Image (cartoon, rainbow, N blue to C red; front, side, top):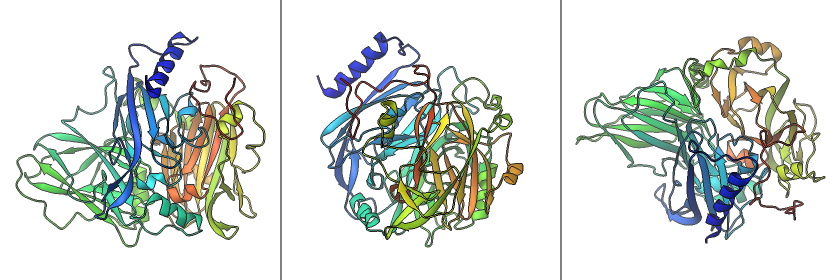
Length: 539
């Protein structure tokens, strides 16, 4: 029996014959075996090494349903340790499965490990990608779509078809060359181009006149925000990272690094082909890529000019972001209305102000949060916390507000009690846009503003229908504020989605904890857990 299949069998036995059994007819299992290798592709017309999953670039999509159990046996055939993170999947009670170095030892070359997680109470458009090193810059990413259960209604009619579009910036340099550049203390240049589903041109999406289609759009790049539009067609926004939105109509939409959204498009234009356009935001020069919307029966190629999109226009983007609001009467993955959770009436227990900065430490480029540039210890934080291993991290390295002083290297962990209601303020005093992500939860994006945040800014907050999502843009010289209910016990990564910044220290972890050991609040380490550093497998 193959090791991956044996591990799956062990999982099933453990869950069925342990004190708690989670297998039932409503929670089916989906099994995947993925082999990660190098391969040669020409995304921008030049042959280069990329990272493939099962020979595919991008990797194979996962199509799931709310509450499905997902088991992925990942076989690492590249020459470096590897992890995959499931961007936006909350990993209820299971930060062990989050796929980041703070919770897991990496999968070593020529070995495998099986992820086992549940799409618990989630619906919507998500992605996965490698969280280790700069691997994400060479591939190892893909789509993860979660559809509703048959008993759950969504606030729009069933579309006539689905299209998934993974938009990414792309470098002709491979991940090792990019990493070498960063390690030498130099920032990354502007990417060389943009891709849609791994292609820079020629990709076509086919539909029929008079029908409407669901487009799932994600920015899986590592550095640049994008604007997305379809020539001659309007887009109705219906979902953002698991939240159903008010159905506003847009000519174009900004999608920042790590973000996902879903739009509906009706094909009612004359029968021909039309350009699908993605272009970079806040860059000079502007990078653009195209695909085709092909009407079935069309013999007419798309015609230029391309539809014009915004370029630098920061105020335009912030104004659009404020129009993305929660549909209070619609349900999401569960039947109760999204508006039933009155997030704006809950007292805030703590406020964090997290300020990013570019600096130099020991003469080399680093990025910091509240003056600390994160360094991964050899022992994953979660293992150190669970087994009470000293000397790995503490709760004193980083402060919860910016303070004056020199920048330092450190392992930043902030401590919270389970069920605390926390205000995260992301303060950006730089002239470049930021994109921040929180693992293990979604948060309500209650405010955007320019300048420096202070408590008086709360008067501007949207306390009624702010959208709940996992990744938040912070505009140049501005702030973004989100409210999060920390009801998922574990060790969770708070990171920049701009991967060079994350690689050079712009991240931290939050521990959500209480002193109760209960399977209802947190699962024990999986039977196949990997151990490294100071953490040794229990005997």
